[in-house]
Image 1 (spheres, one colour):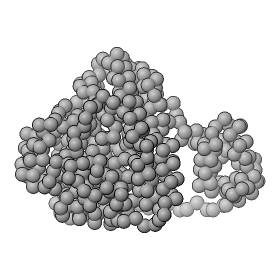
Image 2 (tube, rainbow, N blue to C red):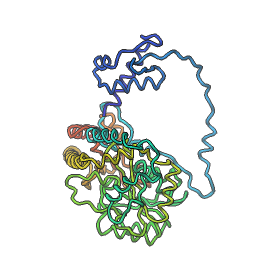
Image 3 (cartoon, one colour):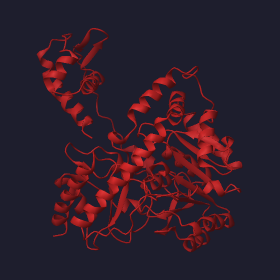
Image 4 (cartoon, rainbow, N blue to C red):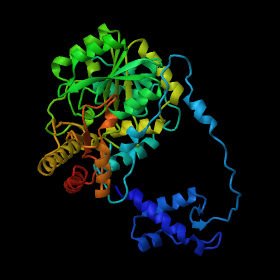
Length: 479
């Protein structure tokens, strides 16, 4: 959690000391900096790299780091970019929905909080939960594979496509799988392929803010369909299709973000039937199947496993169970939709780098992969139980309607009179970063909410301390 802040602090200290050295002067060795500042060699390497990127330091292999030669350049004159306000706000054609590119709902889960702030807003595993050694070894082995640095097939490596098809199950084949660069990229490709600009797209309410950002940036109009503990409500889904004429519905049937709901068994076939009768696609975001908790029991199959008619377009990823930088995903579809998805993905990104695909194959084929998933399942359950107990003990005025058996967060309902923004600011002052609930709604929310992540923190002690700080923030915000 604090590695990045340590790098920033060390770079700042070294930057202030550069005046001690003449241009071309040699800086202390990495070992000397490690001993002096009591930091790791990795921190020293990254801090030096930051100064190199700024043009303040140069490195010479085998010789060390040196202060760069002085470069005096006149400041560039300020330009006039005001014309862009008109250009970026103009509609491309009459009747189209103006695009709104707002990433704030996503960046709240990506931003690194200040040092000492407990990260209840994180969207990825803490480094202690990531299979760092297994990933490093997999990447090293992948780099030595014959042809590893060549151009991969545009659809992805056949063996990796086969692995994803096998894990999804049912009648899915490798020929129906496209390898992509993470779940966000898969959702972007799916919405671009299946809905024209200006069209409505049905979404769960509440839902993942990153998906809402994708839809709005593409000029689509998100239409909310409420969920309950059993997932999306089929009768309201049917009403929404009839009222809007939408041809796409995006859902997370397993451990829905943010509620943690699982689509009820009797609703699975009903959702597919309703979409099929509407002539619509169901985009299945199967984002945390590999983050099931130890007490989850057998998981339902992905919706696409039971779909023969090409209604479902499936997105799944390795990222959530590994690292935010391990961006390998699968986009699965049948029929003409697959050809369009393939074309758009190629135009947007060509292909996922082959070394990363080879590393993914190495990782999921190693004995460490199932061990990692078992360990992760146990640890996530422990963290969920710790956070749940702490919330019920210290925050009884916050409602916890559902305890999920998968995923990495809890979804809390605040008192009706609570102001999310006031609480979020008070929490940051108390030393804990939160995710407010309003970005998860595509229309007016039914009330104030809060999402607490238990995966991005260092451990159970930090969870308990975070809730204690949150209690202080609530006392301030609700006073």
